[in-house]
Image (cartoon, rainbow, N blue to C red):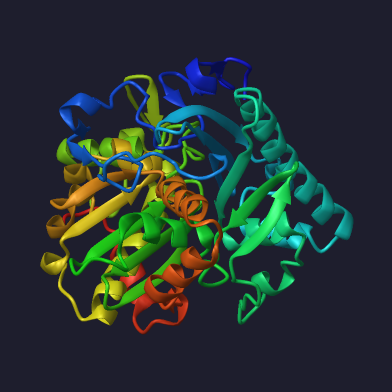
Length: 422
Protein backbone atom coordinates (compact mmCIF):
# COMPACT_ATOMS: atom_id res chain seq x y z
CA UNK A 1 0.00 0.00 0.00
CA UNK A 2 1.44 3.42 -0.94
CA UNK A 3 1.80 6.22 1.58
CA UNK A 4 -1.05 8.03 -0.16
CA UNK A 5 -3.27 4.98 0.22
CA UNK A 6 -2.39 4.64 3.88
CA UNK A 7 -4.45 7.73 4.46
CA UNK A 8 -4.16 11.11 6.08
CA UNK A 9 -5.04 12.33 9.52
CA UNK A 10 -8.47 13.87 9.68
CA UNK A 11 -10.41 15.67 12.38
CA UNK A 12 -10.96 14.02 15.75
CA UNK A 13 -8.13 11.55 15.16
CA UNK A 14 -9.79 9.94 12.16
CA UNK A 15 -7.54 8.23 9.63
CA UNK A 16 -8.98 8.82 6.18
CA UNK A 17 -8.73 6.97 2.90
CA UNK A 18 -10.33 9.10 0.24
CA UNK A 19 -13.49 10.40 1.85
CA UNK A 20 -13.95 7.53 4.29
CA UNK A 21 -12.27 6.38 7.47
CA UNK A 22 -10.00 3.39 7.25
CA UNK A 23 -11.37 2.37 10.65
CA UNK A 24 -15.11 2.68 11.20
CA UNK A 25 -16.63 3.36 14.61
CA UNK A 26 -20.06 3.94 13.12
CA UNK A 27 -19.83 7.58 14.16
CA UNK A 28 -21.51 8.95 11.04
CA UNK A 29 -18.93 11.70 10.49
CA UNK A 30 -17.91 10.59 6.99
CA UNK A 31 -19.33 12.43 3.96
CA UNK A 32 -22.38 10.73 2.54
CA UNK A 33 -24.11 10.15 5.88
CA UNK A 34 -26.68 12.98 6.15
CA UNK A 35 -27.57 12.60 9.83
CA UNK A 36 -29.88 15.58 9.78
CA UNK A 37 -31.97 13.86 7.11
CA UNK A 38 -31.96 10.55 8.99
CA UNK A 39 -30.79 8.52 6.01
CA UNK A 40 -27.53 7.13 4.67
CA UNK A 41 -27.53 5.72 1.19
CA UNK A 42 -31.27 5.16 1.42
CA UNK A 43 -31.23 3.45 4.82
CA UNK A 44 -32.37 4.92 8.11
CA UNK A 45 -29.48 5.46 10.52
CA UNK A 46 -29.87 4.61 14.18
CA UNK A 47 -27.89 6.48 16.80
CA UNK A 48 -24.97 4.82 18.54
CA UNK A 49 -26.06 5.49 22.14
CA UNK A 50 -28.44 2.61 22.37
CA UNK A 51 -29.73 2.70 18.81
CA UNK A 52 -32.23 5.50 18.91
CA UNK A 53 -32.41 6.24 22.64
CA UNK A 54 -31.94 9.64 24.17
CA UNK A 55 -28.47 10.75 25.22
CA UNK A 56 -28.16 10.60 28.99
CA UNK A 57 -25.47 11.85 31.39
CA UNK A 58 -22.77 9.39 32.41
CA UNK A 59 -22.98 9.18 36.18
CA UNK A 60 -20.34 7.84 38.54
CA UNK A 61 -16.80 8.59 39.64
CA UNK A 62 -15.01 8.27 36.27
CA UNK A 63 -15.10 9.33 32.64
CA UNK A 64 -16.23 6.47 30.40
CA UNK A 65 -14.10 4.98 27.64
CA UNK A 66 -15.45 2.32 25.27
CA UNK A 67 -13.27 0.05 23.13
CA UNK A 68 -13.92 -2.35 20.27
CA UNK A 69 -10.93 -4.63 19.67
CA UNK A 70 -11.55 -6.18 16.29
CA UNK A 71 -9.49 -8.62 14.27
CA UNK A 72 -8.43 -5.79 11.98
CA UNK A 73 -8.91 -2.59 13.97
CA UNK A 74 -8.96 -1.05 17.44
CA UNK A 75 -11.53 1.70 18.02
CA UNK A 76 -11.89 3.70 21.25
CA UNK A 77 -14.23 6.51 22.29
CA UNK A 78 -14.03 8.90 25.25
CA UNK A 79 -17.36 10.23 26.54
CA UNK A 80 -18.08 13.46 28.30
CA UNK A 81 -20.32 13.70 31.34
CA UNK A 82 -23.16 14.66 28.99
CA UNK A 83 -22.90 11.33 27.19
CA UNK A 84 -21.49 12.86 24.01
CA UNK A 85 -18.28 11.63 22.38
CA UNK A 86 -15.44 13.89 23.49
CA UNK A 87 -12.58 12.20 21.62
CA UNK A 88 -11.71 9.05 19.68
CA UNK A 89 -8.66 6.88 19.08
CA UNK A 90 -8.47 4.60 16.05
CA UNK A 91 -5.71 2.20 15.02
CA UNK A 92 -4.99 -0.90 12.99
CA UNK A 93 -4.71 -3.92 15.26
CA UNK A 94 -0.94 -4.66 15.31
CA UNK A 95 -1.73 -8.37 15.48
CA UNK A 96 -2.44 -8.24 11.73
CA UNK A 97 1.31 -8.88 11.33
CA UNK A 98 0.51 -12.44 12.42
CA UNK A 99 -2.37 -12.96 9.96
CA UNK A 100 -5.56 -11.34 8.72
CA UNK A 101 -7.99 -13.74 10.43
CA UNK A 102 -8.48 -15.31 13.83
CA UNK A 103 -7.37 -18.79 12.78
CA UNK A 104 -4.02 -17.37 11.65
CA UNK A 105 -3.61 -15.69 15.05
CA UNK A 106 -4.55 -18.89 16.88
CA UNK A 107 -1.91 -20.82 14.94
CA UNK A 108 0.68 -18.11 15.55
CA UNK A 109 -0.10 -18.16 19.28
CA UNK A 110 1.17 -21.75 19.46
CA UNK A 111 4.52 -20.02 19.90
CA UNK A 112 4.37 -18.44 23.40
CA UNK A 113 6.63 -15.60 22.29
CA UNK A 114 4.30 -14.72 19.43
CA UNK A 115 1.29 -14.90 21.75
CA UNK A 116 2.97 -12.49 24.14
CA UNK A 117 3.91 -10.14 21.30
CA UNK A 118 0.31 -10.10 20.11
CA UNK A 119 -0.89 -9.38 23.64
CA UNK A 120 1.62 -6.57 24.10
CA UNK A 121 0.77 -5.11 20.72
CA UNK A 122 -2.95 -4.66 21.36
CA UNK A 123 -2.37 -3.59 24.97
CA UNK A 124 0.03 -0.97 23.64
CA UNK A 125 -2.61 0.47 21.30
CA UNK A 126 -5.18 0.55 24.10
CA UNK A 127 -2.65 2.24 26.37
CA UNK A 128 -1.90 4.88 23.73
CA UNK A 129 -5.58 5.65 23.46
CA UNK A 130 -5.99 5.88 27.21
CA UNK A 131 -3.01 8.21 27.53
CA UNK A 132 -4.46 10.42 24.82
CA UNK A 133 -7.76 10.56 26.71
CA UNK A 134 -6.05 11.15 30.05
CA UNK A 135 -4.67 14.40 28.67
CA UNK A 136 -8.24 15.70 28.36
CA UNK A 137 -9.28 15.01 31.96
CA UNK A 138 -9.99 17.69 34.51
CA UNK A 139 -8.02 17.60 37.80
CA UNK A 140 -9.28 14.74 39.97
CA UNK A 141 -10.97 12.87 37.10
CA UNK A 142 -10.09 9.31 36.15
CA UNK A 143 -11.04 6.82 33.44
CA UNK A 144 -13.08 3.62 33.33
CA UNK A 145 -13.21 1.42 30.22
CA UNK A 146 -15.77 -1.06 28.88
CA UNK A 147 -14.30 -3.26 26.15
CA UNK A 148 -15.86 -5.62 23.59
CA UNK A 149 -13.93 -8.05 21.40
CA UNK A 150 -14.41 -11.30 19.55
CA UNK A 151 -13.48 -14.45 21.45
CA UNK A 152 -10.00 -14.89 19.96
CA UNK A 153 -9.11 -11.24 20.55
CA UNK A 154 -10.35 -11.54 24.13
CA UNK A 155 -8.22 -14.64 24.74
CA UNK A 156 -5.11 -12.96 23.35
CA UNK A 157 -5.78 -9.74 25.27
CA UNK A 158 -6.19 -11.57 28.55
CA UNK A 159 -3.17 -13.84 28.00
CA UNK A 160 -5.24 -17.03 27.73
CA UNK A 161 -4.13 -19.83 25.42
CA UNK A 162 -6.47 -19.75 22.38
CA UNK A 163 -5.52 -23.21 21.06
CA UNK A 164 -8.92 -24.71 21.95
CA UNK A 165 -10.63 -22.13 19.72
CA UNK A 166 -8.88 -23.43 16.62
CA UNK A 167 -9.55 -27.14 16.79
CA UNK A 168 -12.70 -29.25 16.78
CA UNK A 169 -15.06 -29.13 18.59
CA UNK A 170 -14.05 -25.43 18.85
CA UNK A 171 -14.90 -25.17 22.53
CA UNK A 172 -14.31 -21.97 24.50
CA UNK A 173 -13.80 -22.57 28.21
CA UNK A 174 -13.43 -18.87 29.09
CA UNK A 175 -16.57 -16.98 28.14
CA UNK A 176 -17.45 -15.10 31.33
CA UNK A 177 -17.11 -11.36 31.62
CA UNK A 178 -13.75 -10.29 33.00
CA UNK A 179 -12.39 -7.37 34.97
CA UNK A 180 -8.83 -6.28 34.38
CA UNK A 181 -6.63 -3.18 34.36
CA UNK A 182 -4.99 -1.66 31.29
CA UNK A 183 -2.34 1.03 31.77
CA UNK A 184 -3.72 1.66 35.24
CA UNK A 185 -7.33 2.03 34.04
CA UNK A 186 -9.93 -0.47 35.34
CA UNK A 187 -11.61 -2.29 32.46
CA UNK A 188 -14.67 -4.50 32.04
CA UNK A 189 -14.39 -7.06 29.23
CA UNK A 190 -17.66 -8.35 27.75
CA UNK A 191 -18.47 -12.08 28.00
CA UNK A 192 -18.87 -14.18 24.85
CA UNK A 193 -21.24 -16.88 23.67
CA UNK A 194 -18.93 -19.33 21.90
CA UNK A 195 -15.58 -19.70 20.15
CA UNK A 196 -16.85 -17.71 17.17
CA UNK A 197 -19.60 -15.52 18.69
CA UNK A 198 -17.79 -13.24 21.08
CA UNK A 199 -18.16 -10.27 23.36
CA UNK A 200 -18.50 -7.83 20.47
CA UNK A 201 -21.71 -9.58 19.41
CA UNK A 202 -22.95 -9.87 23.01
CA UNK A 203 -22.40 -6.11 23.27
CA UNK A 204 -24.30 -5.63 20.01
CA UNK A 205 -27.20 -7.76 21.25
CA UNK A 206 -27.27 -5.65 24.41
CA UNK A 207 -27.26 -2.43 22.39
CA UNK A 208 -30.07 -3.59 20.13
CA UNK A 209 -32.20 -4.64 23.10
CA UNK A 210 -32.95 -8.09 21.68
CA UNK A 211 -33.37 -9.47 25.19
CA UNK A 212 -35.84 -6.74 26.16
CA UNK A 213 -38.10 -6.42 23.09
CA UNK A 214 -40.97 -8.56 21.87
CA UNK A 215 -40.35 -7.50 18.27
CA UNK A 216 -38.31 -10.02 16.31
CA UNK A 217 -34.94 -8.49 15.36
CA UNK A 218 -32.12 -9.68 13.11
CA UNK A 219 -28.67 -8.27 13.87
CA UNK A 220 -26.07 -8.71 11.12
CA UNK A 221 -22.44 -7.72 11.72
CA UNK A 222 -20.32 -8.21 8.61
CA UNK A 223 -16.56 -7.81 8.82
CA UNK A 224 -13.69 -10.27 8.64
CA UNK A 225 -16.19 -12.63 10.25
CA UNK A 226 -19.93 -12.54 9.68
CA UNK A 227 -22.02 -12.88 12.82
CA UNK A 228 -25.82 -12.92 12.90
CA UNK A 229 -28.34 -13.03 15.73
CA UNK A 230 -32.11 -13.49 15.42
CA UNK A 231 -34.40 -13.11 18.38
CA UNK A 232 -36.45 -11.21 20.90
CA UNK A 233 -37.05 -11.25 24.65
CA UNK A 234 -38.25 -14.85 24.51
CA UNK A 235 -35.49 -16.49 22.47
CA UNK A 236 -32.29 -15.66 20.61
CA UNK A 237 -30.22 -17.72 18.16
CA UNK A 238 -26.73 -16.69 17.03
CA UNK A 239 -24.33 -18.00 14.42
CA UNK A 240 -21.10 -17.05 12.70
CA UNK A 241 -19.68 -17.61 9.24
CA UNK A 242 -16.36 -16.72 7.65
CA UNK A 243 -16.81 -13.68 5.40
CA UNK A 244 -13.12 -13.21 4.58
CA UNK A 245 -12.00 -9.82 3.21
CA UNK A 246 -15.00 -9.29 0.92
CA UNK A 247 -16.93 -6.94 3.23
CA UNK A 248 -13.91 -5.01 4.59
CA UNK A 249 -12.31 -3.79 1.40
CA UNK A 250 -9.64 -6.46 1.30
CA UNK A 251 -10.46 -7.67 -2.18
CA UNK A 252 -10.50 -5.05 -4.99
CA UNK A 253 -7.98 -2.68 -3.41
CA UNK A 254 -9.95 -1.14 -0.66
CA UNK A 255 -13.39 -0.97 -2.23
CA UNK A 256 -15.61 -1.44 0.81
CA UNK A 257 -18.20 -4.18 0.89
CA UNK A 258 -21.27 -1.98 0.66
CA UNK A 259 -19.84 -0.34 -2.46
CA UNK A 260 -19.09 -3.74 -4.02
CA UNK A 261 -22.66 -4.85 -3.38
CA UNK A 262 -23.88 -1.71 -5.15
CA UNK A 263 -21.52 -2.20 -8.08
CA UNK A 264 -22.54 -5.83 -8.56
CA UNK A 265 -26.22 -4.84 -8.47
CA UNK A 266 -25.54 -2.22 -11.14
CA UNK A 267 -23.67 -4.70 -13.34
CA UNK A 268 -26.56 -7.14 -13.02
CA UNK A 269 -29.07 -4.46 -14.08
CA UNK A 270 -26.95 -3.57 -17.10
CA UNK A 271 -26.56 -7.20 -18.17
CA UNK A 272 -22.76 -7.21 -17.78
CA UNK A 273 -22.85 -9.73 -14.94
CA UNK A 274 -25.05 -12.81 -14.99
CA UNK A 275 -26.74 -14.54 -12.08
CA UNK A 276 -23.90 -17.08 -11.82
CA UNK A 277 -21.43 -14.26 -11.15
CA UNK A 278 -19.78 -14.42 -14.57
CA UNK A 279 -18.68 -11.14 -16.17
CA UNK A 280 -19.36 -10.65 -19.86
CA UNK A 281 -16.63 -12.20 -22.03
CA UNK A 282 -14.94 -8.91 -22.94
CA UNK A 283 -14.45 -8.08 -19.23
CA UNK A 284 -13.60 -11.54 -17.93
CA UNK A 285 -9.80 -11.24 -18.04
CA UNK A 286 -9.23 -7.60 -17.08
CA UNK A 287 -12.43 -6.66 -15.29
CA UNK A 288 -14.61 -3.63 -15.94
CA UNK A 289 -13.83 -0.05 -14.98
CA UNK A 290 -16.62 1.87 -13.23
CA UNK A 291 -15.53 5.37 -12.27
CA UNK A 292 -12.22 4.90 -10.47
CA UNK A 293 -12.90 1.26 -9.58
CA UNK A 294 -12.09 -1.86 -11.59
CA UNK A 295 -14.39 -4.76 -10.75
CA UNK A 296 -12.55 -8.01 -11.43
CA UNK A 297 -13.84 -11.55 -11.77
CA UNK A 298 -11.86 -12.45 -8.63
CA UNK A 299 -13.61 -9.71 -6.62
CA UNK A 300 -17.03 -10.87 -7.83
CA UNK A 301 -16.29 -14.45 -6.73
CA UNK A 302 -15.06 -13.27 -3.34
CA UNK A 303 -18.28 -11.38 -2.69
CA UNK A 304 -20.30 -14.37 -3.91
CA UNK A 305 -18.58 -16.72 -1.45
CA UNK A 306 -19.22 -14.38 1.49
CA UNK A 307 -22.72 -13.52 0.32
CA UNK A 308 -23.70 -17.17 -0.07
CA UNK A 309 -22.59 -17.99 3.47
CA UNK A 310 -24.41 -15.01 4.98
CA UNK A 311 -27.62 -15.62 3.01
CA UNK A 312 -27.61 -19.31 3.97
CA UNK A 313 -27.03 -18.36 7.60
CA UNK A 314 -30.01 -16.01 7.58
CA UNK A 315 -32.29 -18.67 6.07
CA UNK A 316 -31.18 -21.29 8.58
CA UNK A 317 -31.68 -18.89 11.50
CA UNK A 318 -35.22 -18.21 10.32
CA UNK A 319 -35.92 -21.93 9.92
CA UNK A 320 -34.51 -22.79 13.35
CA UNK A 321 -36.53 -20.00 14.96
CA UNK A 322 -39.68 -21.06 13.11
CA UNK A 323 -40.19 -17.62 11.60
CA UNK A 324 -40.74 -16.17 8.14
CA UNK A 325 -38.80 -13.22 6.77
CA UNK A 326 -41.93 -11.05 6.83
CA UNK A 327 -42.26 -11.63 10.59
CA UNK A 328 -38.94 -9.90 11.34
CA UNK A 329 -39.64 -6.38 12.54
CA UNK A 330 -36.10 -4.95 12.40
CA UNK A 331 -32.91 -5.80 10.54
CA UNK A 332 -29.92 -3.98 12.05
CA UNK A 333 -26.78 -3.81 9.92
CA UNK A 334 -23.80 -3.17 12.16
CA UNK A 335 -20.65 -1.19 11.40
CA UNK A 336 -19.51 0.81 8.40
CA UNK A 337 -20.97 -1.83 6.08
CA UNK A 338 -24.44 -0.92 7.27
CA UNK A 339 -23.91 2.82 6.90
CA UNK A 340 -23.34 2.64 3.17
CA UNK A 341 -25.31 -0.42 2.13
CA UNK A 342 -28.35 0.30 0.00
CA UNK A 343 -30.95 -2.30 0.95
CA UNK A 344 -32.28 -2.43 -2.59
CA UNK A 345 -28.81 -3.39 -3.86
CA UNK A 346 -28.57 -6.09 -1.19
CA UNK A 347 -31.92 -7.44 -2.35
CA UNK A 348 -30.95 -7.30 -6.05
CA UNK A 349 -28.00 -9.67 -5.58
CA UNK A 350 -29.79 -11.84 -3.00
CA UNK A 351 -27.69 -10.89 0.03
CA UNK A 352 -30.95 -10.24 1.87
CA UNK A 353 -34.46 -11.38 0.98
CA UNK A 354 -36.58 -8.47 -0.24
CA UNK A 355 -38.79 -8.67 2.87
CA UNK A 356 -35.77 -8.18 5.14
CA UNK A 357 -34.10 -5.52 3.01
CA UNK A 358 -37.22 -3.37 3.35
CA UNK A 359 -36.77 -3.30 7.14
CA UNK A 360 -33.01 -2.72 7.20
CA UNK A 361 -31.50 0.00 9.39
CA UNK A 362 -27.86 0.96 9.95
CA UNK A 363 -26.88 0.37 13.55
CA UNK A 364 -23.42 1.91 13.58
CA UNK A 365 -20.77 0.21 15.68
CA UNK A 366 -23.07 -1.84 17.90
CA UNK A 367 -20.11 -3.21 19.89
CA UNK A 368 -19.21 0.33 20.98
CA UNK A 369 -22.90 1.17 21.52
CA UNK A 370 -23.35 -1.77 23.87
CA UNK A 371 -20.09 -0.95 25.64
CA UNK A 372 -21.42 2.55 26.30
CA UNK A 373 -24.63 1.23 27.83
CA UNK A 374 -22.70 -1.33 29.88
CA UNK A 375 -20.09 1.15 31.08
CA UNK A 376 -22.71 3.71 32.01
CA UNK A 377 -24.58 1.07 34.02
CA UNK A 378 -21.41 -0.05 35.81
CA UNK A 379 -20.52 3.51 36.81
CA UNK A 380 -24.09 4.31 37.85
CA UNK A 381 -24.53 1.10 39.86
CA UNK A 382 -21.06 1.17 41.39
CA UNK A 383 -19.95 -2.24 40.12
CA UNK A 384 -20.35 -4.95 37.48
CA UNK A 385 -22.81 -7.13 39.42
CA UNK A 386 -26.08 -5.61 38.11
CA UNK A 387 -24.79 -5.67 34.52
CA UNK A 388 -23.64 -9.28 34.80
CA UNK A 389 -27.06 -10.32 36.09
CA UNK A 390 -28.84 -8.44 33.32
CA UNK A 391 -26.64 -10.00 30.63
CA UNK A 392 -27.18 -13.46 32.13
CA UNK A 393 -30.96 -12.98 32.13
CA UNK A 394 -31.35 -11.33 28.71
CA UNK A 395 -28.41 -12.24 26.44
CA UNK A 396 -26.20 -15.07 27.64
CA UNK A 397 -29.00 -17.63 27.33
CA UNK A 398 -28.85 -17.29 23.53
CA UNK A 399 -28.55 -20.50 21.54
CA UNK A 400 -25.44 -20.72 19.35
CA UNK A 401 -25.87 -22.55 16.07
CA UNK A 402 -22.97 -24.22 14.26
CA UNK A 403 -23.80 -23.56 10.62
CA UNK A 404 -21.40 -26.19 9.34
CA UNK A 405 -23.42 -28.84 11.20
CA UNK A 406 -26.84 -27.44 10.28
CA UNK A 407 -28.80 -29.73 7.92
CA UNK A 408 -28.80 -28.41 4.39
CA UNK A 409 -26.22 -25.65 4.93
CA UNK A 410 -23.93 -26.82 2.14
CA UNK A 411 -26.72 -27.05 -0.40
CA UNK A 412 -28.13 -23.65 0.56
CA UNK A 413 -24.69 -22.08 0.49
CA UNK A 414 -24.04 -23.20 -3.08
CA UNK A 415 -27.49 -22.23 -4.35
CA UNK A 416 -27.44 -18.82 -2.62
CA UNK A 417 -24.19 -17.79 -4.28
CA UNK A 418 -26.37 -16.89 -7.25
CA UNK A 419 -26.68 -13.12 -7.77
CA UNK A 420 -30.45 -12.90 -8.02
CA UNK A 421 -33.33 -11.44 -6.07
CA UNK A 422 -35.06 -13.65 -3.49
